[in-house]
Every structure is written in structure tokens, then in C-alpha cells.
Image (cartoon, rainbow, N blue to C red; front, side, top):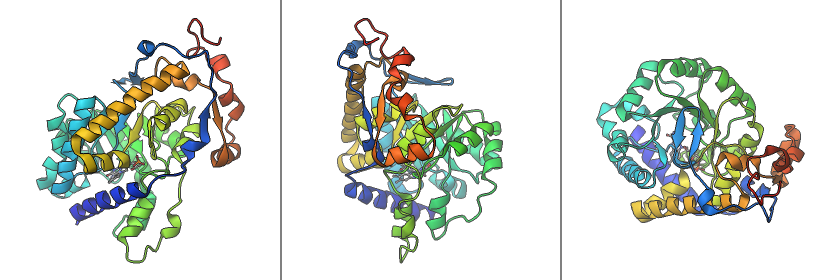
Length: 363
Ligand code: FNR
């Protein structure tokens, strides 16, 4: 039952990618171009640090799959690509392992193929502290993701219907495991109120996983006979919207959901993400072209990231948060309603210091 669902998710998410294209709210984020701000490519470092975590690049392959023979093979390929490019990686939800230990290797393969990499386990917010520890042990995980997916569960015919225990359970897990806990959505976004609540529960970091890319309302509607909840297909906040309103969240915020290319990656970092994740697009790449295609794509993204940081005068990913950013369109309306200071965002290089402090820079 669970393994069939995992295969369905992969198939429907990959089909969704072929229909992707066109507008998402990252298009509403543009940079003010400062012609004298550019630095030397050799001055750029992609290393990102948040809390005690250090990654060689601010990019990760976000949670997807495991639990069936086919998805185990996908996890193997994703893990090899992560190893070859040095980016962090998360497994998909490990509920299938708690239900049936015989599928352990479809998750464990991620560590076997990537022994020295940064690997994250992934569980739902119903999981007992004991099972959360088992998940971390199986993967020798460096961090534990907990996903929040009330909309997906609601549309899923066999989904959960009770969510009130999630907060207290997350607090228990955060206290009960000895790796950092990162709470994420699955494509509907985290509001600033949610991120604050997660901080108060002792969570280490939040991954907004916003709207704009893989759409689990549409995927679960595709698994139902009559797509009964199709009116929910536009639910949630976009990734840039979530990042904009969580800039002073008090915990590190990661950005994922609808990241299409290196420019979206730079946009997310400029809006305050400490690192940026992609799932559906990378899945499609690995299904179409295998490990070499995904290695090539991630390598190109990192090279382009360096190029764009050079043009923008940012020596580090955190330095991008000093760039002047303009918000227009739908996203601007969201910012106005939620009280986000757009003038500060558009003129922050004047006060920030780091991005433009180089000799020959604009300050
Ligand atoms: C996912 N996602 C996901 N998230 C999670 O926390 N646990 C999971 O088991 C899954 N499963 C899953 C399967 C497949 C096939 C996809 C494509 C995605 C959600 C994922 O981590 C991410 O939050 C969303 O996909 C949004 O990012 P993209 O796909 O727009 O880059």
C-alpha cells in the first residue's frame, strides 16, 4: 500500500514537471543592477553556515522518496549525484520503514552511496520519539527533517485527519534526538507565525517548501477518482512570499519549492534563505538522464551561482542578503498585506556593508 503510493508520487510528480513552465512568484523578484558592484569570481565562496552546520554549497536535494524497489533505485542515484557534487540530501518520508523493516535498504542506500555526505532523514509529525531515533540511526543522519502536510493528507483518500498533536510531538522529537531538527512543508509554505511557533518548540531550522513547484494537492487529486478537492490546487504561500515574511524569524530558514534555475536559487538566498532545496526538477532530471545528467545539472547550477554572486558583488551566500531587491506583481500585493518593508529591501545595500564593501564597490 505505502510502496504503491510512493511509486504513484514519483510518477505524478515527474509528469507534473513536464507541464511546468511559465510564471511562478520568483519571477516577481528582481535585482537592482549596480554596474560597479561586481567582484572577482575568485573572491566568491559558496560555503554556507547556519548554526553549527556547514555545507560546501547552499544547495540540497530535498526530500522525495524510498519505500519500494523502484524508489530505492532512485534514492541510490540521487545519493550518488549528491556525493559527486558535494551537496546535502534528504531521503523521503521513512514511514514505510516503520511499517515494514524489509524496505530499510531503500533508505539506507543513501548513506551507503554517500558515506561522508550530509544526509537528512525525513519523518512525519505523528512519529514517536523512538521511531525518530530509528530513522536517524538507519541513515546515520546528520539532521532530521519533519514534514508538515495537512493539505496533502486532507486530499489523500487514505490520509490523516487529526493534526492537533503535531506541535507537541515536534517539541518532543526536537528534544529527543541528538541531531538538528528541520521542519518543512511539502509545497504549501510556512507562514511567519508557523516559523515562530517552530522556533518556540526548539526546532533548529525551518524549510518553507512553498508553492510554485511540485503541487501535492494536484498529485493527490490525481490519485482520487474524481479529483474532488481540485479547488485546493492553488493553496498556500509561494516560496519567495514565505522567505520575505520570515526574515527575522530567529531561526535559520531554508528555501525550497518551485526553484527552477540558478536565478531562483540566487533570489531565494537574497530573500534570506541560508540554503536552497529542489526536488521535483531534480527528480525529472535523474529519471530522464540518470546520474550523469543530474551531476551535470547541479554542477552547472553551482557554477552559475558563482557567476551571479560575482555580478551582484556577494562574496558569500549570506552576502546576497545585502543586495537591493525589487518586488512586483502578485508577490508585491502579498508583501503589502503582510506589512513587509519593500523600501528597505530595495535600498538595503546602502546600510548593509558586506556586499559592497570591496574597493571599487559602490559605497
Ligand atoms: C516530495 N516531497 C516530500 N517531502 C517530504 O518532506 N517528505 C516526502 O516524503 C516527500 N515526498 C515527495 C515525493 C516526490 C516525488 C516529490 C517530488 C516531492 C516534497 C519535497 O520535499 C518538496 O517540499 C516539494 O516537492 C517542493 O519542492 P519542488 O519539488 O518544487 O522543488
